[in-house]
Length: 482
Image (tube, rainbow, N blue to C red; front, side, top):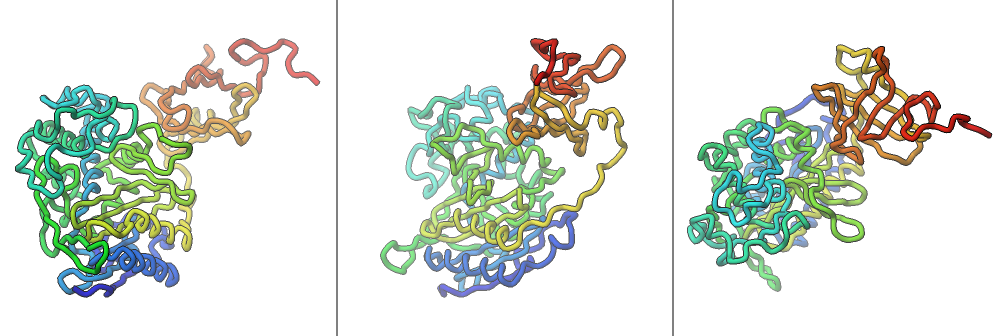
């Protein structure tokens, strides 16, 4: 094989086009030459220093691939965007989307114990959310020989995945990565889809709508062969590529740079045919308490989280014998980085994919969306709720957003900012911050005029401690004084 060759594209090129979404012309403009060179330099250094037989990388911005490149060789040619690599635990992000679809359809609750839907599980009381977030306490790996390098036929039944002590930690207390936990989630999908295997459900419900025809359970040419690189010599050894059977939902999938660009665009923006943006945002929310003084890495519902240079990234890394993969999204900048390599160890693909997003964000920060008025019709009563409100003497402002959503912001520089979703009964539910899950109600006088806002028993009034306002505990009758 020839190591060190490269190809670069600053348009979708061989990676294939990503379905486009509405965006400003600036967002679709090509990356600047200095940005493209910095990206290529970072990928080239990662491949050379990590001694990867081949490596491909891409950047997604504005819903489409804006840069791709390949280094090294696959079957004597520089890898392009249609070459399959095994993506390992990136598979978990696909399984998580399938589970969230079931939740959004009302077929399960994330708080359901998995035993309510699956018989014979070793942890029937673990919730589906805990399995998604790796907080069920299950063992990290499947029973028996190294499951990633051995045939799934060695573990033909679900009970064969677990040893005598399947649970290593109390459920719900801390993050403990569990590959067998995702095998249970794959079985859950099959059970609730009437016996349709998880990979078929994935193809029908997710891959086909997103145009991801090159993401498959087994390799389909052209694909890269997996290699181990000797730690002390520049020689390679082929790695096996086994069908892992029941462990497939933990890391079986093969994909291409082009398909993963589509996946990154979906994870950033959503697609109503597959999963709404609100559910994707829920996946990015930390699901277990962080450990340590200041957390740099966490886990949501099927996605890894990482803080890097002041940015919060969401995505996943993956590894299987002979392969490494990483995909990080930066929702704030609407940019993502993808890296694939065909070696068992060596390249720091997680840092590399994160750096690709950082280079673009640093060289070419996101251009804000144009301001536009809210779509009509306008509810005058709702507009009348906007403006200053006071929690005691602490000033806040209530703003109206799209979809009857409200946003409460403290004006003092310190306080509790939250967004609220409109409900059918005329209340609002907190979406984030301190008030997440709390109910916001408009309390009216007998004549229908607005008296105050009740937010989880906190009273917000139009004036700061005005004697006429219904402040809990009352207000000193002499009022403010000097």
